[in-house]
Image (cartoon, rainbow, N blue to C red):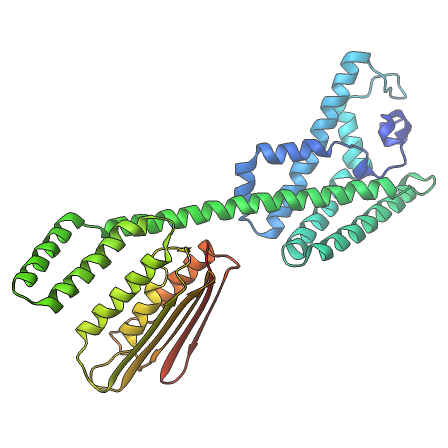
Amino acid sequence: MGIDSYPEAFHPIFRSSYPIFLRYSRLPFCFEAFIVCDSAIMAITRLPIWQQWLVHALVLWLGMELSDALSYSYQVYREGPYLINPDGSSVTAWQRFMNHNYRQGLWAVMAVGTLLVELNYHLIFRKKSIRFFLISTGLGSVGFTVLLAYFNQWKFGGLPNPIGEPTLVVAAYSLGYALLRQYIQQRVDQTQQQIQLTNAELHALKAHINPHFFFNTLNTLYGTALLEQAEQTAQSIEQLASIMRYTVDRSRNDLVSVAEELTFITDYVQLQKLRLPVRENIQIQTELTYDEKPTQIAPLLLLPLVENAFKYGIRMDEPCFITLRLSVQQQELELVIENSLFPRRNDQPGLGTGLVNTKKRLSLLYPDKHQLSVQSLADRYFVHLHLTLH
């Protein structure tokens, strides 16, 4: 008679009342395999969900089969053959493997179970509240073990399997898997942030071409302007030198003081005003307030927003305006910019580049600590930034 006719001849785990999926009790092996292959999992997270599911099912299935084969071989080595076929021969590891997957359908159980775990993670854990996830995990675990219990009863006969402990095991696996994936996702996000920040630093360094020559030249022009008693020119040169020194030196820091950033913005606005003619059709109003409490901010964070206002909100031959209000109180920054908006010429780039870069920096450096709103009307442009500082 074939081996399939004698399920009682196998290891007692196959004769227990637990569903097929739970009879191995070797889940730690699977988690250890995930941790050891951490770099591989980081690559898997970029695959489509259905591919992640297939990899998950395959790894779990192979892990259980390998763990069972090693355990059985070790027991046979220590105690001798203890599972015997009807013909008197010892049950081999290959026979156990065939029984698991042909007679008991372990591969199908793994496929269904991991599919439910993956869907629970992607659709519930990542998008809903933790309470909703726990409820979903509990209900899904109960439903899965109940179906397996009735499947075992239908296929092998006997009384219905108890579902208490198996449900806890399935729920614990689903929860552990979600937490592990969350940890790996955080590592992936941190790596991507580091890459983006490194690229930004490299671009900034490429722009710092021979700064010493530039500063020495500005110092010479500043001294010449003082000798010629051109005080306004000297002041402008000093402000330009301050801006360039801040851009070169302080932009390499992760954080700078708010006082330094506000000084930089003030110098930038003053130089922008200086280059514009004094005309009634050009109106520029600025209001900067700071409570002087020591606070830090990412360098050059506000510059693209202010720069865009001057770049796209001013025309020499048409009525135009810029209103800038910047306030820092109790480590809360409020920036409101309103400026004229004109139809874009064909040779003029769009408004989005500086704004997109600023949004990326805010998302990287101040996640959940900022609100940035932009509104574009027919003749004016609004920017409102609220930021909780360090």
